[in-house]
Image (tube, rainbow, N blue to C red; front, side, top):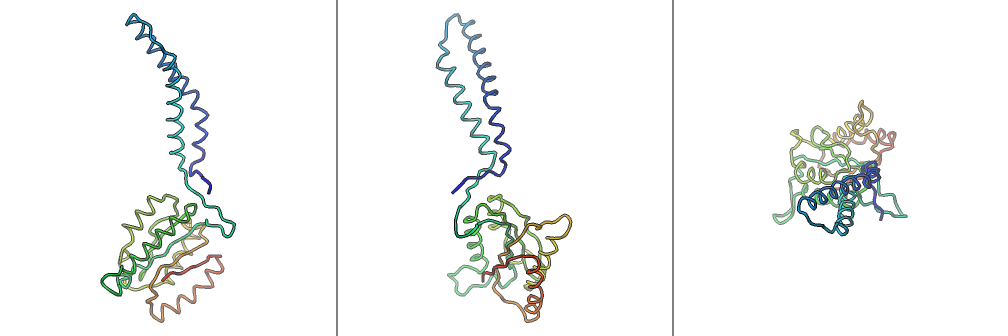
Length: 226
């Protein structure tokens, strides 16, 4: 496991930290000297002169490391767990179905799997699309896990796209359009994960078969769940 930074350029500011600490220590020493002069007694500055720079160094470096956005990267020899992935989620009414009262809805199960996927591939960018009778981009590609989990928990719900049906072919056409349009939203996308219950009409299935060659031509790998 390695650590990468989303904003590595901020780490260059660590070179400035010694200068900042010198100025802080100098100002602190001047303040203590003035207080000692007005109080008419000597103050032992040896301990403080060592402690203050050390504390300032660790505080400033820690703040810069946090601001640089560290993230965990998993290493594996079997596969490259990275990429730019679009998650398509069926948000039609059929995704609110469940087999028994004690089971989760289909969309809730999809949320659970998606959360695991986003957690287990921390070095990948994810974007989201809602699929119904029409399809819309719910988010662009992002590394920000807090934003992604907020979208998963609060932005994915049945009929977030207010159009009945599950036109999966339309979803892929929208994806291809967003990959080539200017400015491109999904230009670097090479993988799609589709979450759907497969409850589509024969006409929708035929349209889906017709869009497959376009996805192959665009070098987009599609994996379906559901």
